[in-house]
Image 1 (cartoon, helix red, strand yellow):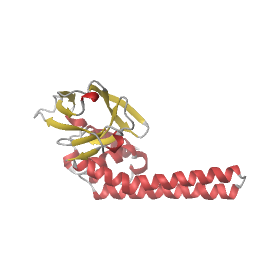
Image 2 (cartoon, one colour):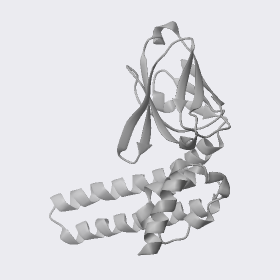
Image 3 (cartoon, rainbow, N blue to C red):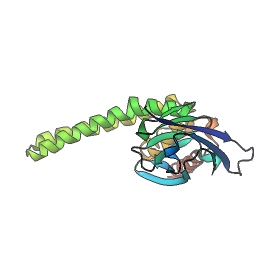
Image 4 (cartoon, one colour):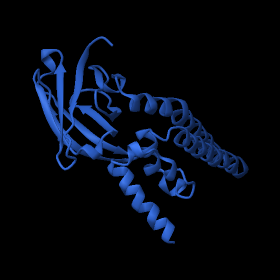
Length: 224
């Protein structure tokens, strides 16, 4: 990184969960960055919604968020800057924001982000690269009017997707205390709803809104 902004997230947790959680963000960076708009969005597959819109400055910025929403996957974007950062918003984390490409920003002090980066780089990203390669080869076969070849590359796509599902399930089973596992169960609920992975999640996750949401989903499955 040639230039960076340092963002420090200091979380003040209230004992009563009925109150919102005060999130204080300290931003240090070049004066030229002051005044730029930054947005924090929720992130679920192709869906995104703005949670906070802030203006970069040298002062602390206080955000209000419900304590049962964190940790979870969010996205950071800055106006006039290339890329976006997908990250797990978590207590005590630090972000070194690359001012040339936000996606190259670095995160430390977050167990959830370490787990997310492991899953993304070691499991999901390699699978997505394979599927995209198979898609290109399928398109080439279709253009050449080779139906057998088209079916071949389609089958490989399905096999790879099934393999990704299996590896994702194994990750969840091996990380029952992880908020990343909770997120993955939510975004892949239809695939894993009968795998009993939800029942094996650790009690430390019970406070989270996603856990309560999945609990209701599980009840609905059990009634059928």
